Figure 1 (cartoon, rainbow, N blue to C red):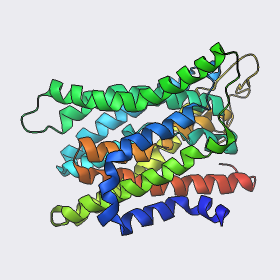
Figure 2 (cartoon, helix red, strand yellow):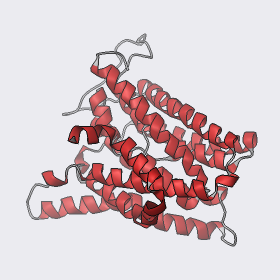
Figure 3 (cartoon, rainbow, N blue to C red):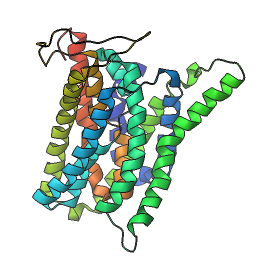
Figure 4 (cartoon, helix red, strand yellow):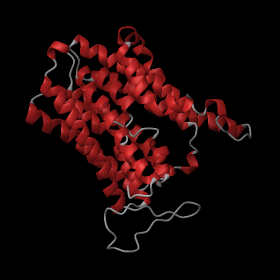
Length: 328
């Protein structure tokens, strides 16, 4: 029974949220707390001395920001639909999922390098989102700087606070000359918090759709479904390509990855290509849905919600191929 729940938690939580939206959407105010705790327990597992920046970290981050902004303005030019533009922009601007290092490790990637990028991605989001969102979704009577200060006062503590709190906890243990290790009973806490977050997010999203169903156009839904699928493929494969072009070389106790043969096929996976693919493609969709519902047109959250499905299908295929010894 427990294995069934773990294997199907995503779909079950989405179904519960949709079916029980009339009551569960009232729980949406606790979403920031759930997201904070989810990140906190995840970062508690990270030892700061294992964090090292690589060249592909910066390359993926710059490409992600450029594509995010470019996607919004390109789609506004092509569709004149703000929901489509914001929804597909969210598919790119979302930070890396905290579960990405685990998937990367199962595929043969570097857990340490992806953990570092996950933190870097959260820091970048805490800066870029407050600067960009007021430009593309303005509230009546609110100036850019007012909107900026409002968003950054909520987003930055949510993304940076968990890391600072986890680091201070680890530092306090060090002062007491005790080694820090998350209690076994709390090791699975991020997973359960993630499940709860999905339930309330889907309830909130369903409530928004029902309330605004008369204004939703079929073409908008098609754009978001197809666009989120394409954005998922683009990011996973672009990340792999960047990682292949910028292999990591490290010393000490970590691996050293060098492309010995310049004629190595570009579809041949390397440690960096696997890691960068997960860094770019696997998104913190719970945070993305919440940000879209809170600071943009609420219906634009459909883009991030659809991305949940596509990225899980893509990773399921990769894990299955890896388990059977096939190229990923």
